[in-house]
Amino acid sequence: MVGNLFILLALGGTPDEGSATPPLADLPVITEVLYAVPKGAEGDATGDGSRHATGDEFVEIYNPTAKAIRLSGWTITDRNKPDAGQFLFVFPSFRLGPGETVVVFNGLDQTIPGPVGDAETAPAKPNDRFDDAWVFTAGNTSAQVGLANSGDWVCLRTPSGEVISCLEWGTTDETPPVGDARLETLPRTSSSSVQRTLASPEGGL
Image 1: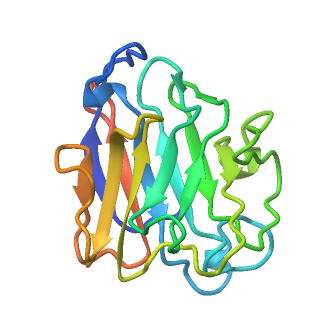
Image 2 (image 1 turned 45 degrees about the horizontal axis):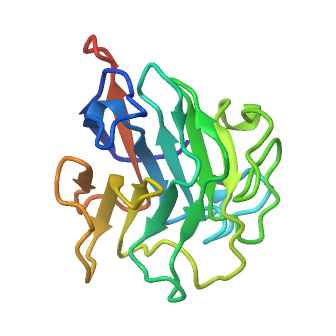
Image 3 (image 1 turned 90 degrees about the vertical axis):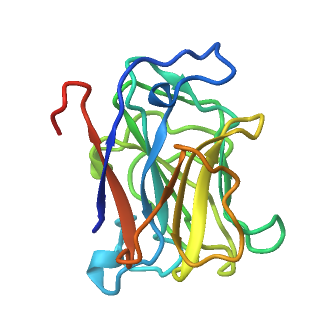
């Protein structure tokens, strides 16, 4: 996916789905957020033939572990309150395999090619149009629901509400709901999208 800021994050280990609070290295991580869709053809992240300032926004999540992670009931949200412009996606029954990536598009006015899931049903298979990532649409129907260019944060939570991964950028009037290693605050140089590059346990990229 597109991105212009690279942050090194060393992760390793294997997930323990039975643990209430697994080690950070055993968890999925938000690897990219496109919050300010570029103008022109470059902004057509969904590949539907046209750029949309809101619909082409996306959040990308990666499983850096050696086991599948069940994301059923996990949520992606931004800082806004429910019914006040909040971006919200709840995963349906879905398992993200080891080394696999899932991309969730805002989806407003989008017709995304290839296998695409939604909050009801996961796609039948990964989407070869997006480097074999699993692709979902949040199915957003309002132009008021989107990520703020000037400042926002996006968090991935378990069904119980525990924050597993969170990215913050720009200036916000609210503190993200986590303050430990699961929060990444991005430099002011970020202008459209942010991306993490994950290091392998052996130290290579």
